[in-house]
Image (cartoon, rainbow, N blue to C red; front, side, top):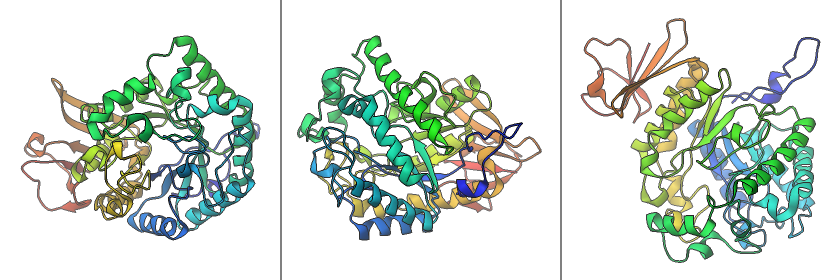
Length: 425
């Protein structure tokens, strides 16, 4: 991904500066990448491997990661937690974060910097969260970063649910021995995220909106916000004007497959000209599901529906898993996840797409038969196009275009009879 700072600041008429545009990228997801769970040697291994595979960014929390309280051992870094139970910042942590992000940049990876997670603003208050973001800007603004205000801004909005992890619990404690799909009903009942009154949800939104307003005054870096699947990024704040792109999360259930393309098309229709990114599609290996075939399906549905950038996540990498920690999401560990073939295929695909500028092509169209997606078409407007078919059997006889195999990330000589396929001009 081209460095934001290398692009120079955009200028409005009259010389006034405005926020840098969000670049296209292929990002991995490292929620616990700045914690003790990922030592320096494995951090370097992860950075180097993803850069070699073709990734250009990674999502990383500069703060307390999700699913743990601030005093939980897995929230701590080699120099302690980001902030204490009162929200007082740890200067040594900020220096460590700066060093690791600089390492990412030098290997060609931008950092999508998350300042925390939705309920944490209820833990330490709006003023402390605002102050924390000011410190992040102090140490990161000279680096190649995109800022993400918070992860899952609307998660656990009821008072009981918001404080369920304090001070040192994890979601492992909340959900006990249940794992995989069996954990989901207990997950929903434990957090009560959809039970909070509208007024309570509005107060959460107002608090994060105030932090966003302060952040936007202090940086020209692109800013986005991450949400649950219940809303999108523009709905997460009172005024989305400072946001560089709309965002969605489609979650980790098989039934969410149509949302991989519908949510993006809906955003483009509602917000013409505004970029949109799915920050959290299916994680590979989560609940023992969503392997290579599903990973390329998620990528191409995003591309075909108009995504400006692509995100990936793997169970075992996002949580630096050992098979037990946050095991209700699946038993795949870090070393297993690092051996998956999908990132290499996704990286090769992204290189091809980025090389032709396809993630900026403006025209998108879905062809649907009943409830079944037949194809997604994305076009430049000057003759160049791509068409994604979930099933090659739907390609009409005589259709023109080079044939691209999503499962290998390479062009092939002949159209397959079945399976996913892409035609490109």
